[in-house]
Length: 266
Length: 221
Image 1 (cartoon, each protein chain N blue to C red):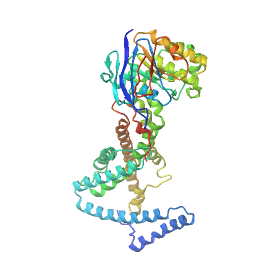
Image 2: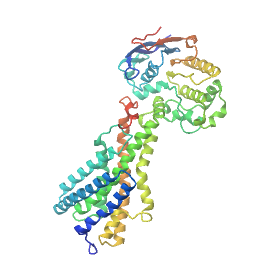
Image 3: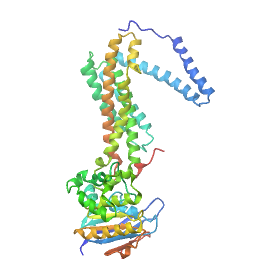
Image 4: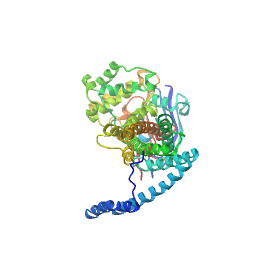
């Protein structure tokens, strides 16, 4: 399966820096102020990916269920933190809620894909589990960040409507139902869009990677279909869980809208 | 007249940097309690506290002798309804805005939308039947205020908390509103109104109790 792989030497890898130098040159010429970020981003890419390369090599060779589970939990925590930080409309938010939503949706969908659909031997094979869970997390993280931000944005902009509904005796759920709908829709839109154009506009990274690695394109396509569908399911579940857990935090024990919900992140 | 609603030593601060205000007052069945005080003195905040849309520093409110903590918040707000100064109109026609509260579980369990009743109130407030088909977001400020008032009246709360209901109205419409709400208060037993208004001669209304706020102590007279 990997017979067609073309290895990249250290020198060839170093040559790829030329590409970022071109981007840096454009940034300097147009005074975009991105030079420092580009340089820092390049260094981080090298360091983080080299580091994870060693981690994965160890995890793959150990192929131990508990090490794999531990790594997934760490990945979930990092993804949860990153998603909460990308929400300008959310004044303060507990990472724990994002973590549990991501963990639940990722484990649920990932388990179905790994255990039932792909079913390698052993079923927790790190070579399958880590990339599958990583792809789910990467997409879910973006989805829940969009949902959370949209939920708070909607509630802030429709606070008068929500209070009017509460004043008539609406429950918090009845009062924010419309905002929840918009939030979940917002989180799922990029995933739905990518389902629409995959193969026509974009060739997904995983499929491209497999083809570059020498896999049969038909085989790569089959994997990609599974990946696309699992991402759609995981994003939907993650967004629903997070929004479902979050809306209650916007209300006091009396079911009134908390004043701080209408503030933005400092 | 029987005591319906009692504000017992409610203490709150109207805003950051403002002093604490203490308010007490009694509203009898079929009566109107008019809350008066300078701008920024916390009249709106008081109404929101009474509707349990904001928590007070301390104090109690009683409805027919029962403390507010004995009621579930949703049940309380169903009975003690706050109608905001700025009327909120939802997407859709005026008719849909009027029937909207009846889609909520708390109201649906009690009663169904009565279109003829809504029409009767709209007519009393100088609005024609054709307004029901109008897009609610195209209403003028005065029309929206009257539609919002009708929406509040037809759900039949026990206590209606009205925040500046006359602010956007001309003299004729304001007079119609005051006539309607004072009649509504005695139309059925067990009703009362707490009102905040800068405009109109509130003290000329029948069955009015005035509550002054804006100082450390407030009391009824």
